[in-house]
Image: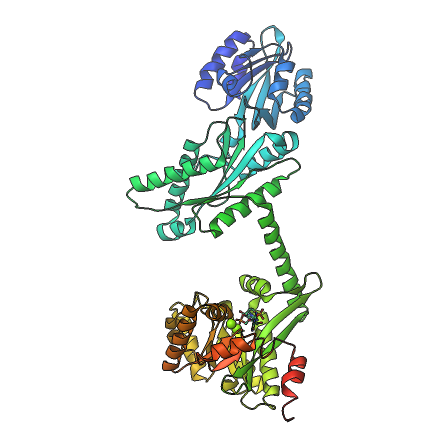
Length: 562
Ligand code: C2E
Ligand code: MG
Ligand code: MG
């Protein structure tokens, strides 16, 4: 600050005019604080943004109190006192001001003490808004997450009821844009979106850029703000118009997660997590929409995470709490026991017995289905080997998840298992539990071929639940089609579905495959469904899934002992 030496001895008026000239070309706010008589002079533009009632302030201590964030006032006073007393000649502090709307603004204040006319000690310097400088995002010009966190921290502490809502916005296909068109295109989209957002929110609303493709709108309202739904729709429309104007050269949509509730007692971490959850929900629900944070849905999500943790722990403790149950499969010709389906059970200390409908999807999502799938395969293979001593043609059905197909070396695992156990491949049937994935993927097709060539049969599970169709049957070359219980229940209720099942079974037969009908619970159901000519039956009528020991007692030891 060499030029300051030129100011030595100048009158306050003279200094002020120099400052106003310098001020024009700067985006900081210049100031002079006359420490001797406690008078503050600030550049005019600062009075527009902050609650200074004029550019010259004589009751300095009082006015500064309305501009400076209360908690930072003491720290500032101490520093200024040192400048006043001559203990130091420079001032450099980062602290908070409040703008005209009462919102927190982080500023960086730098100044030097010079001696003015009549020997007054004058602190001359600049105030810059930190959000406008390094703390802001270079691509969009918006403030970044660190600033959002600081601002929210103080607002939550001092004025939580002023927060109306937070809206986290994310681009639905940002990764794709970046990958297909390059990072520059991605940056351009971020800039466009920032503009679209700013165009649609009022001045009293803060907008921040978060990580990657996400933005946060914070409405710390004056009671005049628009509701988030309206804002989101406007943003959506602005983007759609822009995409159209650019002749669809690039297409994207945005989703949003909103948090609007009582903010008292909340932490910044919670705000970040809740808005992230709401945004993810919007994306999960199909993207291009806004979701309001729902505590109950969040609790369910947390419980799923906790169940996942318990599953992982139990798997790591040598599959503690897991057990393979077996449900009989009988021949439709004479109701003879010819096989069983291996069905996983899990009992946990905290959660008790959990339904496979709950824990199987969690195992799939987390990839834990791979180790547990191996466990089921080995248990089932060993059990089958043993039971074949009672019934030589006995076969075991093991459910396979698509995650196992895609993410593990299924062929090697299966081969290794049956070799080690000494089970002939014809005794193993792999059931594909979800058919929606059987898209024409070459790797998967290869796997099906390999299994076939090794004489391991495949069954198409869940037939009739909406996913399966005859094309899959051909594609995976499945020997067996398992008609799902829900479809059977429909057929028992109405003739139309009954006829469809009949025709499907005829078709399956004409393709050289066989049908296993699931879910027969009553004798009458059996006699009615037998008309459709299934080849195998699996249902509570013949036996519920049960432990290996119980299965032996109920179904095997009654036959001739080996
Ligand atoms: P799924 O493979 O279709 O298995 C048949 C399900 O129907 C079993 O439910 C069985 O208990 C039930 N069921 C059989 N007969 C009847 C009946 O007469 N009435 C009624 N109401 N239900 C009957 P569970 O054991 O709850 O298993 C549900 C699903 O979980 C299975 O459907 C399968 O998709 C999945 N699953 C179970 N174990 C495994 C496993 O080891 N690996 C994989 N990937 N999935 C598994
Ligand atoms: Mg099954
Ligand atoms: Mg099934």
